[in-house]
Length: 263
Image (cartoon, rainbow, N blue to C red; front, side):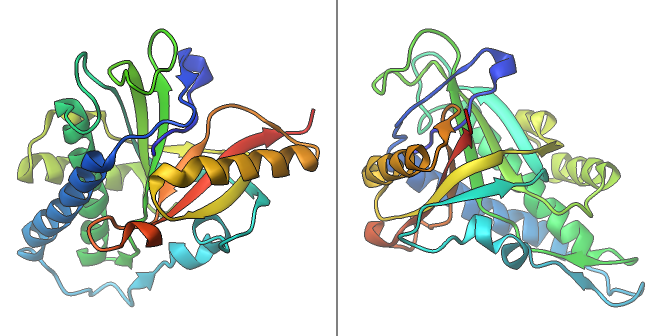
């Protein structure tokens, strides 16, 4: 299930309780794997030994453990700080859905391509090399027109993002995108950007199991928020920690968040 926070400045409504479907999950996993292999092999041919001092290793998973590895079975209120992300926006074409959309396919390849190109570029550079993990995919979904209908997916808009360390500068990003476009030309490469996003107060829980059972966890989160004096703002945020290529459905992990406020 991919349903998240719509951008109120865009005039988009949130998709509540939407399910993308298993065919999309499988395709997403395939693209992630192929992109990481392709980008890694392209850059490994120009590998340099670090001569500018010891490599700096950033453990984003440890730094943001409370946000990306919350304890199972526990609903909690968190304050999500402003962080830096690689982002790409788009819309599902008429007559398509995420699993069949050519534009969405290109967006996924561009986002993961930029993430892995940045990672390897900074790790292999001669001066001040940096290593860090490519973080999990996050998705924010809205609708472009009309009202949400789970059976009508060609009016969906999306914002996909991957957390990126603050040490990555715009100059690094632009250099990486130039490398990516040279190695793997893609019309969607031009739509990837490096930007900051702050979610703020949110109710959060780790969902274990199939995406189809997420509504049960979301309802627990809604009740927890109301019982503690919070109201939901709009939509919800999902972070995909599980790997559908390897994990059984019952073992998939998805971090769920609802932005909240005190009335």
